Length: 194
Image (cartoon, rainbow, N blue to C red; front, side, top):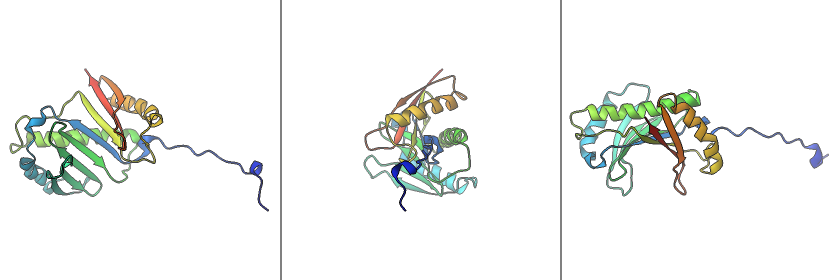
């Protein structure tokens, strides 16, 4: 016997929060985009691969400098990629590709910290272009997972308070605004005020 519609009890399933996804991306713009020399950074990032601590399993550096609007240099890892781009929107980004066993709060803080650490490593290397430094007044956070974070206002309404609360642990004041582009992943811009 087939039950009637009234007999079927539908249990609403909880929608996972945007930061339940492991695919968090963090991007910091550079202070002076004109200083980026991707050719000089290949050796610096290659040394990072050779001397990487085992927790990120970095395996190679790939140049996409010939690809228009491409990632520039990609520091490839088993679970994570880093990208260094040049041009007017020069930046350093970290893109988590596979799950990691941390809480959403820890994932976000770890992604921010590791992105900053790579940029500090690059700027400290004498082979790097002079003046290579991250801006400290803004960053972008994206979630490359349309299941957990469709790029819409509802996701922003759920994600913005979380981002603000977590990053307020590190910075005195943060303002979170939408930053995604049509067809792209969910992204927010975070302005850090002193």
